[in-house]
Image (cartoon, rainbow, N blue to C red):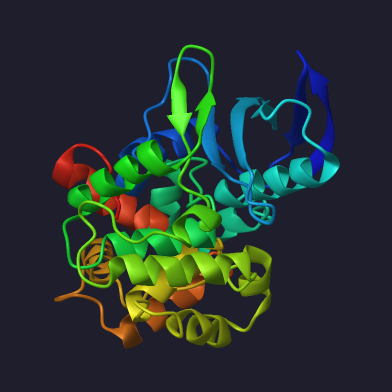
Length: 313
């Protein structure tokens, strides 16, 4: 929820008021363990990010902090953004932090479902943190197709460093993922095998045409959105679900094609084997309208004890 804008220290700023429990610190810790993000948090400076702004696709840099019930953001780059660009940035920051969703009803989920309630107490204020755009999420699914997550993350980071635009945050520089216009002409890149460059070009053109617009995808019936995404070359069942949930920020969906979720539900609910689609449907009824949020908590619980840190793909 937006609560106004202004200028501070020569930078455009805006304030967001979370509806329901929210912790930026928890979100930052999540990003530090979210392998595709390759995110490293600077000490005591909140969350810093560089990304192409959805719509104009101009590269921007944003610094986000939290003070009590307020989440404050400053557009570090470019200086003096126009109103249209500022609106694009605000929308993306809200979406990536799931602040565009009213979370006041989330505690009630924990009251209905003791497993969810325990997870809420264990990870207070944690909401899903997504990719900066469905476009970036789609590109990630193609980069990571049939290779290890860490290998894919390294390729994505090199693409940002070599093809993306740099943003200075004072004592450090962050490279944004390349804009769709840049990837639309990509012929090859080290580590991208087979038809991946071709598929990335298709994703880039789809983004430029507005097909991957987050608001558009969220506004479509879920099955229609998934069908549209699967029409893109190189995008299948798993990839389309990831783009909708982690790119567009759908707050209330179940990733039926994510095998690690089936294992997480098995462990949390004491099932004899991985949760079947029917079991996922039945159990997740109590999570509505925050099924994606509970899924995040389940996966977080599953990953942290196994590795000592969160490594989400």
